[in-house]
Amino acid sequence: MLGAIKQIGGAFLAFYVITRTGVANELGVEPITQYVEGFNTIFSSDLLALAVATFLVVLSQVKINVTNAYAGSLAWSNFFSRVAHRHPGRVVWVVFNVAVALVLMEVGVFDLLSTVLGFYSNVAIAWLGAVVADLVIIKPLLKVSPSYIEFKRAHLYSINPVGFVSMIVASVVSLLAFFGFFGELAGAFSPYLALTIAFVLAPIIAVATKGRYYIARGGSTSELIEDGDAAAVEETCVVCEQDYERPDMASCPFHSGPICSLCCTLERSCHDVCKQPEAGQEQPSGLARVLAKGG
Image 1: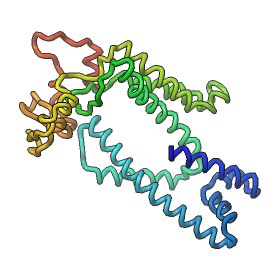
Image 2 (image 1 turned 90 degrees about the horizontal axis):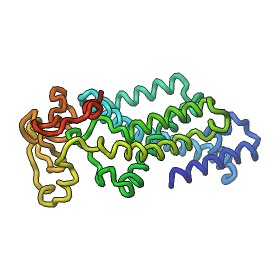
Image 3 (image 1 turned 135 degrees about the horizontal axis):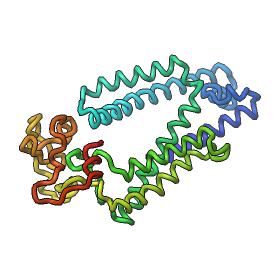
Image 4 (image 1 turned 180 degrees about the vertical axis):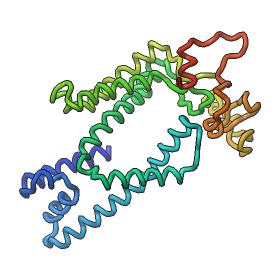
């Protein structure tokens, strides 16, 4: 809600500056121009308006860059922990993220900012559409998705087609629209196209797969959390030898003991043996084996 209000306010300010002050369109979209012209309507001194606008821009940039450095390092860390099973530390990803930002700034990404943000928004909104569909339709209404959110690698397939496929399809279609393959009107509404496709496609895939690829094995986090006594018990990870609450632990046949979620994520040699069926159990389909191992 706050983000939407800020965006609407920014659009209004740009429109005001361009139409009421005679500023060129190219300058009217720059924040410093908007702030200076806006504060000029409040303060009688041009110097005071410039000083306040400069302070606001500096403060905003510090806040934005600190937030992005933190959030970016978290995203890089989570992604490569799951994909490469390596965790060099968050500081490494903070430095990497800041380095990427500096490179983009030096090559003049601001000149392509609308295109970059438009491209990013289509992918991000497709992802959000799939997430919202899972939370408001698949879980409570269709009930083919678990009522809880599992986070441990030991209990998850590496790929769940419900979210993954719906996001990819929505992203591809919306990006084609964004770059003009379906006409000017479709290009203008490409983010809404991404949201709609992901929101509709995710429940369809969930029903078609009967929620098969949400949970790869039993003993879920939800069962431990619902059991108050079990949740309060701490166990020692056989790998890092640190104590964690039971909802953060999983039984590991590879290490023959309980393992914390981080050590489980970073393990590279187990080949997901914990998700392989025991003798006498029904063998999973070929697709299930592929999704469990991420291809």
